[in-house]
Length: 403
Image: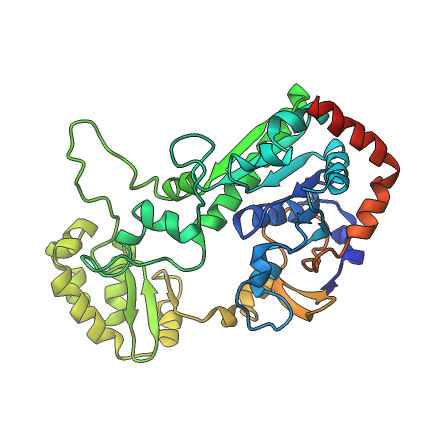
């Protein structure tokens, strides 16, 4: 398996990615914004991560790696990293010069901050009308909560996601894994691609806004329906009566999906519960939901005959299922390896590590080989060297904006 480094950025199989030639300035921190920019890098964009002198806060998060945050490595692959203190005129001028040649800028400042830093959409649009200016916020750019700090689990709790986790009627539970952040990242990457496509027709850039609030509610579109005339306080969950879900086996746990008539009958046949398959009281999802107290104990008793992995093999393609695994099992899972999702990376401090290397598979334009997340300021000297000769011009532009 190849080891990816910044020097190996040459396109895989001699092909560039669909966003080859697009330059992205990533001023964001934590997960949503940075991972959106990594998704763009996966597709061939040249991403420059701009950090303050003390770095992205995610670098400081707890990690069993002694020299770097595991989370930072995971959401910042394939970027060049520079350090700029935007409160200092010289560094601000460097950013303005980078903006003039950029296609996309991404930040996750609260709405009031960019104006104070002199990098709001209106000012940068004067420098580069073709710029796609992306702001990822907690609650959006308007409204009474626009300047509140937003975090994944805060928005999960606010938007009802936590109330629908765990046992029915039990305490709210967080969904671990930053699902709102990662979905917001995907929305932002999609929005950038759409804006770049539209720019090819109009010739001008535009503002693209994504919020964690919008992400959390969009994720729940199947629940976020309120028909005229119906009570607001109605059942909105789509749980399938307890049959579809995670169940204990003799050893381990297995998730089973049995919503369709075909899968329900196959489940009954494989577990020896033929009598349930032939019972008219259980022949639809809704009926099974009504009789869950009768069905699930019998299913659990049947599942004690084998381990979760054995059931996974026995069910095969007849019953959609998966034995519950640790994420560590995914590094060498045959399907993951076959898809080329995981690769080896070389980091100047951490050394060699394995991680996600490819988020999307493109047939004709597979994109450049990914490389490790940068150490703080790793590429500052080389990036600034490329713009030093134009710093006077950048200062002049900044001065004009102040007048």
